[in-house]
Image (cartoon, rainbow over all chains, first blue to last red; front, side, top):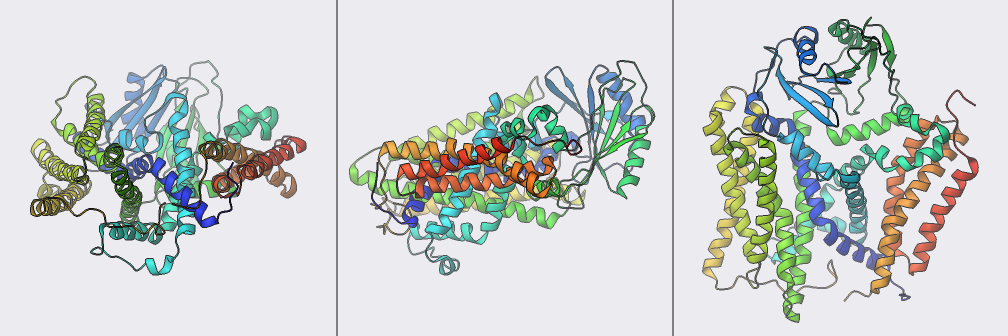
Length: 522
Length: 103
C-alpha cells in the first residue's frame, strides 16, 4: 500500500481526472437527456403531430372520459386521468393490463381517442432515458444513476478544490492562445459560473429517488411496520375493495370539491382505484404549476358517495423533499425559468464534454509519444459519447417524421436512435486516426447540422407546420423546437465549415501544444 | 507525473470503499441518523427518515472524497467502514421507531 504523503489537492486532482474520465459519457447522457426533458412535453407535440391541438375550453371526466375508460378497461384495478395543461392540450388516460401500462391520448375538445401514438415522444423516451438509461432490469438504471450522481457531486467538489485561481479564471477566456487553454477556459467558466446549478440539479435529482436508494433502511427504522412505511412517509391513502359491485358518483363534482379544499388551483391527475367496486376511491392531485415544491396536495373521495375520505397533510421535511423535487422537475409554469434551465443544462453538457476533451487531448500527446494506438479508441468513445448522443437524438427525430405508420412504430424509432449511436461510435473510431484526431468530431458536427436541418424540413413537409405557419397559428412548442433545431444546425455547420477550411489550408492541423502538467489533469 | 500515485490494488480497494463502502455508510447514516433525530427531537419517524436520507447523499459524496484523500488505504477503510459501523450500531442499539400515536 502506498504510504507517501500527498496533499489534498493532489488527491482531489486524481479523483477529478479519473472519475471524470470514467463517468463523463454517462453523465453527458444524463445531462443531455435532462436538458431535452426540460421541454419534454413540447417535444411530444413535435413528435406526435396528432396532439398539436388548441387547448379545450372545458372538459368533463363524467361525460367524456369515464365512458371511454368503461369501454376500454372495464377490468382494470386503477384508472388514471392526466389532465390537460398549458403545455399539453391532450388528456392522457392510463391503466394497467397485467404488468404493462397502457395509455391513450384523448382530444378533450371532442372527447375522442386520438390515433395510436406510434412514438414514445419526449416524455416516453428522452425523459426516462435521463433517469433510468432505459435499463429496467433489477432497477439497475437507477443504481447506475446513483453512482454517476454521487460521482458528479464529488467531481464538483474536487474540481473546486483543484482549482487554484477560481476568481481570476472566472473572467478568463483565451480562445486564441491554444486549443488546450481555450478548452480549459470553457470548462472552468461552465463549471464555476453555474456551479450552484450543477450541484443542486444533481443533488435534487438524487433526492427525488431517495425512497428507492434508502429502501433497505426501512425495516431498521420502522421495525415491523416496514411494509406500510412508504404509505406513511408519502402520506398516501389506500382502501381495499369491498368486492361488491358499485357505481361511481360524479367525478367532476369531486374535482370541484378538491379545488375548493385547495382554495383554487388546477388538477394534475385524477386516479380511480378499483373503479367498479363499492369501495372505489377517487384521488385528485393538484397541479403544482404555481409553486416550486412538487406538492400535489392529494384529496381522496369515496367513489360512490363523493364523500371526502382523506386530505394529504403538509409535513415540513416532506415539504423540503418536495421542494427539491420541484427544483429539479420544474412543475411551475414560468417560461423564462424553463429556458434558463435549458441553457444551464446545456452548460452542464459543455462542462462535461470539455472536461473529457481535455483529458483526451493530453492522452493523445502522451500516447503518440509512446507510440500507442489506444488513443483511437479513447477518442472514438469520447466523440460518440458526446456528439454521438446528439447525432442519434436528431436521427430519431428524422426517423419520427419519415417512418410510415406501422406495428410497433415507436420501437423502430428507438431502434433508429441506438443504431445511429452505434454507427457514430464506429465512425468516430474509424476516423480518429492520428494526427487527424479531431476529424471525427467535426464530421459528426456536420452530421448534426444536416440532421437538424432535415428534421425541420421534414416537419414542415409532413405536417405542414413550417416555422412561419406555427408562429402564425401560435403553436409555440413547434416553433420553439424548430428554432432550436435551426440554431443547432447553424452552429454545427459553422464549426464544421471552419474546421474543413483549416484542414484544407494545412496538410496537418495544428497539434496540441505543449502542456504544463500542473494546470489540471495528471 | 503527479506525486499522487496509487498501486493498482490500492485503486481497486479505494474504489470499492468509495462505492460500496460509501453506500453502506449512507445507508447506516440514514438508519442511525433518523432514529437519533426522531428520539431526541420528537420528530415523526416518517419525517426523520426523509431528513436523514436527503443528507445521506452528501455523506456518500464525502465518503468518496475520503476514500481517495486518506493518506493510506487502511485509514480510508477505518474512516468509512468505522463510521458506517458506528451509525449502524447506534441505530440497532436504540431500536426501531414507533408509529406516531403508538408510544
